[in-house]
Image (cartoon, rainbow, N blue to C red; front, side, top):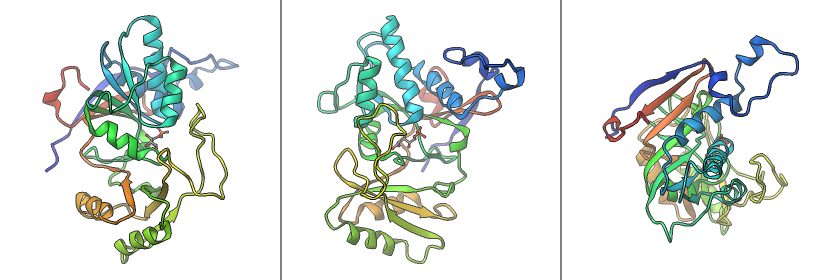
Length: 295
Ligand SMILES: O=C[C@H](O)[C@H](O)[C@H](O)COP(=O)(O)O
C-alpha cells in the first residue's frame, strides 16, 4: 500500500527573489516581465531547493535532463566555493557524467558506491502518490538503478509535470528494449495492451547526443534512438492515462523477454519539490516522519 502523502507549502516568496542567482535584467525594464518566471526559472528554483539537502561527504545520485542540469551546476558552484567538500557524484547517464565534469563534481560509480545517500533528478510526470514517468530523455535504466539504491530520492519539477494519473499528459511512457528482435518485442508490448482504448506504441527514432553538455541536442531522426546501454526505446502512449494497478502493469511489461526496464518509477521518490508559476514552492513528502528539514 502506498504511504500517505503530505503536501506542505514550503515557501511563499516571489520568485524573482529566489532567482537572483542568474537572472539578467530585461533589456527594457518592465516590472511585469520580471514577475513572470519562465519554465526554466521554475526548474532552477526547484533544483536549488533540493540541493540544500546536499552535505559534505555525501554520495549523490546525479540526475539527467534540463531540470537536473540546474542541480548539477549548483552542486558544482558549492564545491568551487568551498561550501561542500568530499562529495562524490554517481551519474545516471553519459550526459550527466559530462555535465558533472564540466561543473567540477568528482564522479564514481555504483560498483564503488552501491549505496547512495541522496539522488536528485527531474521527472516527466508525477502523480498524486509520487509515482513517476521518467526516461523521455532516454536515461531510465541507469536512473532507476541509482535512484533505487538511494536512501533518499528527491524529485525536482515545475508544476507542468503534475498529472492526475501516469501517462495522462499524452506523452510517452518509455520502455528500454534490446535491439535484437525489437520488432517482436514491440508486437508483444502491443499484445499486452490490446483492447486498451487509445493505446499506441512506436520505436523511438530521435537520438540525443550523449556527449553534448546541453540536453536538447538531437541527432538524426531516421535511425533508432540508442541508449547509453546500447539499447532501443519503445514509446508507449495511453490516450487517457494508465488505468489499473500500476504494479501489475509494471510486472507484466518486465516479464516480456527483450524488455530491459521501463520508465514507471513506482514508490521510489521520497519527496517532490514543485516550483509553481504563482511563485510558491510546494514540497510533497511521502513519509514526513523520515525528514528533518521539510524535504
Ligand atoms: O531520460 C530523462 C530523464 O528521466 C529526465 O529526468 C526526465 O526526462 C525529465 O527531464 P527534464 O527535466 O528535462 O524535463
